[in-house]
Amino acid sequence: MPAPLPRSNAALAARDLAVLWHPCTQMHDHETLPLLPIVRAEGVWLFDADGGRYLDAVSSWWTNVFGHRHPRIVAALKRQLDTLDHVMLAGFTHEPALELAEALVALAPPGLARVFYADNGSSAIEVALKMSFHYWRNLGRGAKQRFIALSGSYHGETLGALSVTDVPLYRDTYSPLLLQPLFAPSPDTYLAEPGETAAEVATRRLAELRALLEQHAEETCAVIVEPLVQCAGGMRMYDPSYLRGLRALCDEFDVHLIADEIAVGFGRTGTLFACEQGGITPDFLCLSKGLTGGTLPLSAVVTTEAVYAAFYAEYASGKAFLHSHSYTGNALACRAALATLELFRDEPVLARNRELAAVLARELDALRDHPQVGDVRQTGLIAAVELVRDRATREPFPAAERRGLRVYRHGLAHEMLLRPLGNVVYFMPPYVIEPGQIAAMIRVARDGIAAAVG
Ligand SMILES: *Cc1c(COP(=O)(O)O)cnc(C)c1O
Image (cartoon, rainbow, N blue to C red):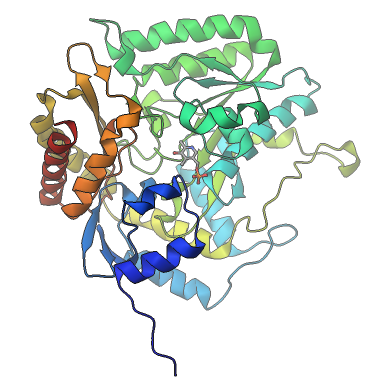
């Protein structure tokens, strides 16, 4: 037998860097930045090959809502593996797919009645954009060919999803390849005028959206938004009244409303879905990330019976939605999602999240007066801290200085996975985090910020 290969951080990282290409990474960084091999995970903790551990304060890119290897999700997956792994979902169905669809329709805002699966967040956005466009076309309104998105939005990386994304770092290079949506100003409260409340910002931004719709509604299929928090765009937050006004404008101007709850869905903002806080039902609700509790890739687009009906006709009409992905409605992923929803059903998750959010708010006080902190904001179990060069003017640090990266390094040296978005240090922990761990998370961030801005 050959000797086993060494299983240290250094050995695994070296093998990785010889063959792998990582997401959202300039690989050259790893000439100086250690790549961390994770060999095991449990609850909030990730363990590396040298015995180090890291508290997953960003829920592994916001997916891992109930901690790693939650026993109920693990058990459900093991049982599912013994009966059905996967079957194509065209012409066939299975209990995990249909039970999950039933459960999602029961939980989603009233009026949503049909579930279309895909296998990642970006694909769900592609589905929603294509469905909206195709709906209008099926109704004989082929002039509707454009979308409206918000400034600072993020909806994914595939070409359609990237088209409605407004993060220059990800979008600009590819802009010649992309659809040309209209961008309406975000109701982002950070951009408030002096003395303006969050609700007043929302009202002002709705007036600007109205002006855009008055000019362009005839050519517009849908407005797409991230309800309450624009996450990848820097955890920018806004008032729920914007959602109410947005729903009214979409109805008035006959355009769809696409709610991208891929990041904010499943209890993150204090309600199961963020849309609930605006009291609205979107025409398309896009879900992924937390849907499977962070175990397997899966996404779903939940839409209305009216949308479904516009596609339902004799085959020869050419009205069918012929979009597909090989792994559509994967049985294991659907089973993981069902187990995740059972946790919401059987445990007081939202009540506990509100308690944890209150703890988080108290701990964040330690950061509010820091001279290089321009803003501290929170919605439910998402909190963010804006690093600035000058607190009075909110002048940002130049992106090239990569201050956030210094916070990241400091965090790893202190058992904490914090992965800032540029100058925004944020917290998005699994819901199983303990109050003491929240305190530790903020302490490490505070020291990391001090080190990064010094
Ligand atoms: C992560 C994210 C996406 C894209 O999901 P992927 O699974 O990474 O393709 C889309 N929209 C929002 C709001 C997201 O946070």
